[in-house]
Image 1 (tube, rainbow, N blue to C red):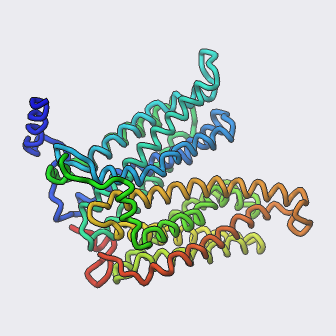
Image 2 (cartoon, helix red, strand yellow):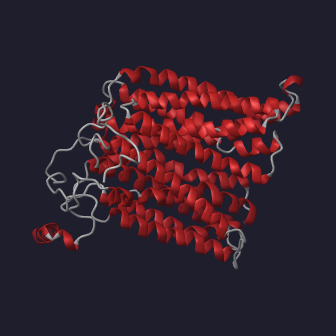
Image 3 (tube, rainbow, N blue to C red):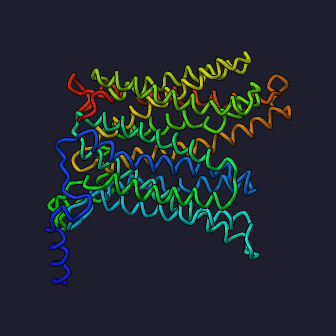
Length: 478
């Protein structure tokens, strides 16, 4: 036992030159280092696009898998989302002779994500029934479920520990800039991978699918290793085994003390649900109600992303002038109310232009809300609690988004069928009724969000007040 401990301490004393990720400076944060750190968001965005977009269509159209089974598989990664708060806490209190807190979790998450993507194409082929052997259907279902679960667990672990590490590296004044870059890089990863996957898989075949998904696994491993290389400074005193650490329940109670964190998490849950419920409805609404063709509805995704990027630019100006993140999030929710109103009126007026304006504003409002709430969550973190605070934000945000997407689709189908059948009266006997019910519910949820955020605006957020707290690409360190 003594010999093993001596060996471990020998590794700990080894020169950082021979150990990856070790002893990087933490006081100065140049742009090159911050950009390299943000590469893990690229891999997270790539995995999200694969799970919720590209493979969604491939499974239904090319592989002929039942829609209900596809929906079940896509929702499997959400099972792991509520554990993000626990992951964040464990990374806050991790014991390590080498002095790392975040690196072990990011590395394990990377391996989970790599493993899930590696087996996924073969699991999907078995799930489709296109095999040389007559295998029971349960084998394909279990294999696909495992692949989606591993990938989801990996991306949630990587993002939680990665954002916590970014928070550790940044000062209180630079944290808003870090939030900005991480958010933009996630969008870049999603947009870029969506375009690449779409172009490569245009002429679909199963061999090509295997190459694409396993290629994504290799890219994930490489980019995450590059992102981590010598980022977290080694601090054995911080991760010593003899330090008394709070339990998860104690740390959670400390975070919730005062009521601000609980109110903020409630606002995040309701606001995220309000913006996410329409995710799978915008394109069908444009095609079914406004008679837009496939090419025209496809541009809606670009408008939504463009609105989100515009939200980042506006966030840069507002927070750069000492703006309050809670007020910024409330502003985003208010824009969302106007946006969904435009979408509703576009159907009544048969106006595609109004619909496109509303779609862009949805992205704008969602971008402001996401940046504002994430910045506010980072500011809530007390000593040694950044992982827990960011994990709580991620758990609430991911769970609320996934549940809202499923609820929005279900409500549209149920209410739409009732309306068309005449059960709701002749005035509502139209296909648009199901969509309108969801959009009106989203507006109601946004008003609830505004009511929840209102009392938080009067609290002073540490690290984002004053003229010195600049925010934006132009003020990024370096």
